[in-house]
Image (cartoon, rainbow over all chains, first blue to last red; front, side):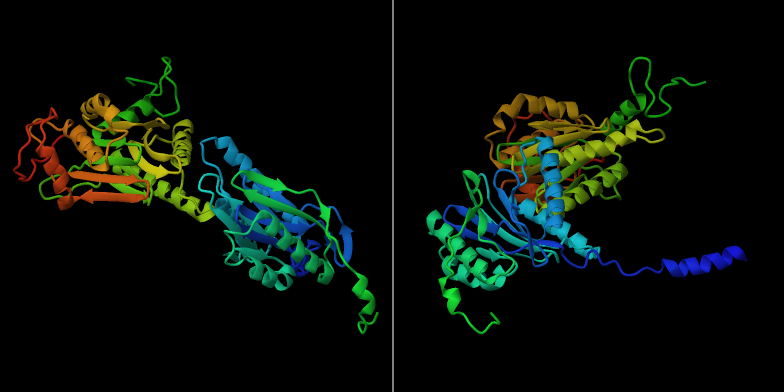
Length: 244
Length: 260
């Protein structure tokens, strides 16, 4: 009798609240931009990790190289990004240790990332990120630029922007890049990305003017040190009517 | 009493340092009909001799497609071959699904070996009683691999396994220098000649007892059987460089293979 009486209330207590820790991101990075240009792929992201509206960490790297010719840019939850970095690093080490002359090229890393994100969303435990994956094939010099997000949605395009950038920068990138992927010089590509990152800094309240930029070409990869974009605020004095 | 107390299971050593059950399993490979694999710098080819249990029966399939870029030929226990070829297919699918990449041949070999090794290292299990020759084309070019029940794989320029395959290997060893630059048709011809050398005196290759498959760069795995083989067999008949039974243009039904 006693044991039965104990069991019933216990079962009732075990009826848990829904799990909420996977409901949304905590510490977040904002937009990542990526474009194709003449020599390869260029991506950019700022160095900020926000905690809600607080600019919590201001020297965070959201661009990560995998192998010689693949770059990944992450927006969304920084902790989930760090987990994905660990998973991909494990994958690359396992692959390297086979030492059979086959290396994971950009499309293969992209596919793996897609499967990882899709399986997690199917478990209702999504990794709360949007990724830009870019790279150049070592022998064929073919360029790859793809997007994959927490739902496992993918697409490939010559311009990609995540987060707020998808609304503010994507139209600008398309206008500047589409149809000119094979003629844009490195200098032009840098200017396009810098200009778009500047627009984002003006309009996106979770962004920073301190950014990193990476390029991947057939000769390899270069990631810049963080640098600051020039901004102009003189016009701000004349803005009225927003409660200021 | 026991004639040999060291062959009761696959994981017991004999004092001479041998695993008898594993060696018996390798004998099973020699009971199957012969298959030949060979490659050039651009293509890989499988050629197999099919057996039929009797005049009223069909011929047992020897070649299996694993993926668009991999195919396998079997010699030995067909039922074990079914298990292994299904495994190969699922590995190939996994690679496609997870990495969007055709499975590299070396990785298929690693997976096969790991699976077969568990069978001869764990108590209460038995080795596979089948040998495989598998061909494929990946980023590192065309390949021919042999898998044996001892959980070994080797890569070859050319190889033959199965009954009376020593004659085919002799042919291949004599001629493989010419393979690397050979055209696909010539490669197939070499394969058929090697296979012809394994036949008993009164037998010959025909459209019923023969299977050919090839794969290459920008050439998906393709199997040739039945009447489609006629051009290849005719080309074989018209040359007399082989040392097998005298070729004949008459394509009557082949005498049945009676060897077990």
